[in-house]
Length: 320
Image 1 (cartoon, rainbow, N blue to C red):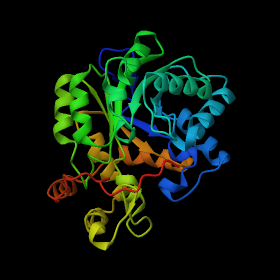
Image 2 (tube, rainbow, N blue to C red; image 1 turned 60 degrees about the vertical axis):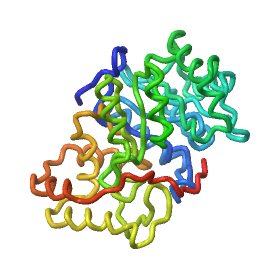
Image 3 (cartoon, rainbow, N blue to C red; image 1 turned 90 degrees about the vertical axis):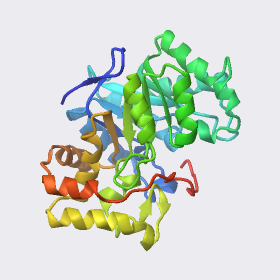
Image 4 (cartoon, rainbow, N blue to C red; image 1 turned 120 degrees about the vertical axis):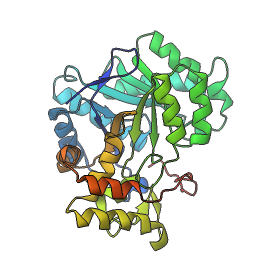
């Protein structure tokens, strides 16, 4: 797989990265759990495949995602050469505290769980859920601590990972981030991140687009997973999904393939983060990305209406 540079850093990532939140066993978010055996098999499939990066976070499954990744790394005798770990600084989950001290605790916990001395990519995560944004943005706050970690060599590249574009865009403009992660806001259903992605691309900030399947529905189907961006969806909300499914069916193509390539074909996007929870999904993602899609299907999909609203505005956020 091609490898693409993260700004002016030594980090290079493949066009597909694998998200590991579900591997931390998060049934409140996804509606299903993932046991240790299945998680290990999925991680082995990722490590054995052509993609060179996986993305996790301090708070995914309250630490279980990182613990399981660390166990898989130890079982292999260490992190494979050239493989990039991307993780995130998180708030204190009970109180919402997110000051510099909490940021430091977060990375120390992550390094211990992952059994590594440093990470390739480190993002400040979900500031919209912190109790006090000023703890993050002020002088000496969590963002200053993030960039200090890069200076210390704990991370080769640093980024901002969150959902709400209205909060993210101003923060992105204030600091020299190497990368960003935004989820659910650049899909076949939603384009809320478009202006921000234009800005980031112009500034040379690596764009890591997460959740191209709108939380899974574009991969699994409206009948099997009637949720959009992690929230239950009624038939009216699912109508755009069914339009995509109908168009894909006319050409004998999996809807997930067109949803994935909507992101991976975008020249602005450095890498697309796809969540997986079983080993066969790893192979499927790679096959979908390599699939040749009819030009008439791509043109028809481009003409579909889409939303510019926040897709998670009414989400009942649960971290587990």
